Image (cartoon, rainbow, N blue to C red; front, side, top):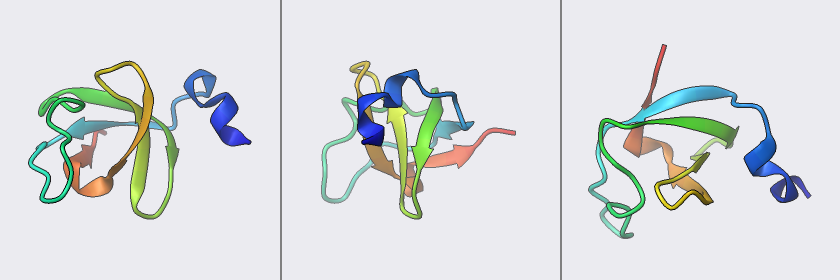
Length: 68
């Protein structure tokens, strides 16, 4: 039941959006290229972040690069 407290979890790392050009989904209204987001959870394919709508959402890793 991790989804009940995702927004309050510690940040794992930060990632920067490099593009919002999705082939199949509309993400350009939820992500801003150049913006840095806090990662709250991560799987092999997805980052779970608080997006531009201030809601928790999962996005493919191809839209981001890690910030060091």
